Each structure stands twice: as C-alpha cells, then as structure tokens.
Length: 355
Image (tube, rainbow, N blue to C red):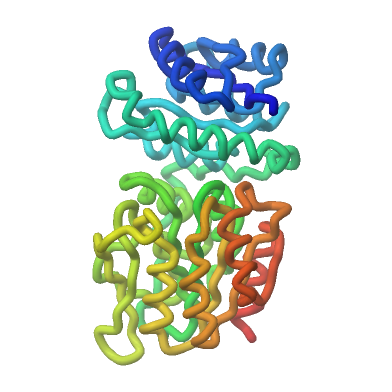
C-alpha cells in the first residue's frame, strides 16, 4: 500500500523539521518535500505532486491564505492549515476553510513551536482524513467563494422578535462544514419563516468568527448562540465551541437557547445529537433536520427523535460531502427523507418548510 505524500510548508526551519518528524513517524505517511513560503510551495507542488499539504498562515513573500487561494485555483489539493495564527487569528482560519482548506490544527499554547507534540495525534488524524478528500476537491471552484464585504458596508440585520416561531431548521456538520455552511446559509431567503440552529464541530473561539463571516454574507441574521437567546424566525444560531446547544421553553410557544457543558457525546461538545434530542423534546411544530459533511456518526441518533416528532430529514449526497461519514450514518438509519448534493440543500430546506 502506497504512503500518503505530504508537503510541509512553514517559514520556520525548526517547525518544518518538527512537523516532518511527526508525520514520518507514521508508517502510512511520508513527507516528500518542504517549502519555506507560498511561492516555494507552488513550485514544490508542481514538482512533487503531493497528496496533502500542511500550510502555515503567516509567511514572507506569499502568505498561507494567498498560497491556498492559488492552490485551489490551479490544482485543488487537500490542505491542513497549521500555525499559531489559527489560535489567535480565528477570522483567518475561517477564511482559509471557506477558501477550501479541509481542516486546521490549533494548539493550546500561544507558541505552537513549544508544544507541537501535544497536537501530534491531531495532525496525523487530520492528514489521513484529508488524504481521503482529494478526489472531492477536483470540482472546487474558487470563483464561487464570496468575498467579505468592506466593514463600512456591513449592516446590522433587524430581526422581528415578535414573530411567532412555528418552524425550526437543525443543521449538523463537521469536517468540511464551514465551506458547506458558506454555500447553504447565504442562500436562505431573508424572509425565512423559521429559526436555524447549527452545530459545527470547532474548538472554542472559532465559532464566533464563523458566525460573523456567515452573517456578513447572508440575508438572515447569523450569530454565535448565547445562553438565554430568544430563538426567533429569520435568525441562525451557531453552537459555541465547547458548549452543547439545547433549547428550553420559558413560556408556552417560545423557545430559548440553553448552553451547557455537560459530558461530551461521542467525544463531542457541541454535539448535533444533543441539539436534535433537545429540539425534539421541546419544540412543538414543524422541524427540518439537515446532516452535512463530517467524520463520524454525530446526528444519526438525534435525527431519529426528530423524525418521531414528525420532522423531515435531509442528508448531503456523497458526491459533494468532503467526508461522507455523518451523512452516511444518517442515511443508514432509514429515516432520511431526501438526499441532495450541497448546492441544492438550501432550496430543499425552503421547500420542506412549506410542506
């Protein structure tokens, strides 16, 4: 069995060596080359034809985001972002994921070079997952990526909190999810007669930047969920990293966000299963549940509770799922009503809400 070929891109010679040593320890991986910046990386990609790239964000000559954009334009390949910037510069990380990066590695310390060993298993695991997405990236079109509007044209969307909530959309996703959400949420109409609750598996800190970016591109309001938020039509709420998103009914026919740090479910917090179960227990009307790209089985248990309450289930088609894990597990329950490719999900949601 051939090894997965990895190109390591980092402006620090020390970091290039550390990352290379970690990758080469795994018998299924091999580093075929190293590059010191984005321009060097583009040359090495043409020469070495790697399967996966680890890419630093902050580099001289051509930074990681510029290099990523060029890679996805010329020769789309699986890219894992790796830098201290992915800890403090969450906006850049979200931008990288929208540009087509499969995933990112964050680190608990301020200086990734000081404790890279602590994320060793994460690096190996994510490179292996990324290697399996190579064929899915061949149809990636960077021209479809929407630019972030200038700060001076951003507007605060007004949400009518007096509108009666009668419809609820629940979305669960993981690896490949940020890019998928960028294709689904901005396509939902501004007059959407439903609230949207989203679980995207991300570490604490990154979900706020994801919400802010989606809000700037969407017709509906998008925010990171806060404990006690009133859940109203025309607004999407993203579960913050490290918290389960559940709901409660403080008064009849009203729904409110309830965040908690109860035990992870399936190793995950937030978990789509927890959110789905809570919605099925407390919501009184029409629900549409959506499972998109992601590793594992999160959502496959909770969607069955939604189904028992009369909810409708949509799963992303294998052809567009960066990682066909969560949608596959959902489909295997036998409870899925509709399987559609990513570009059709937003229309499918709206259509199901009208049924």
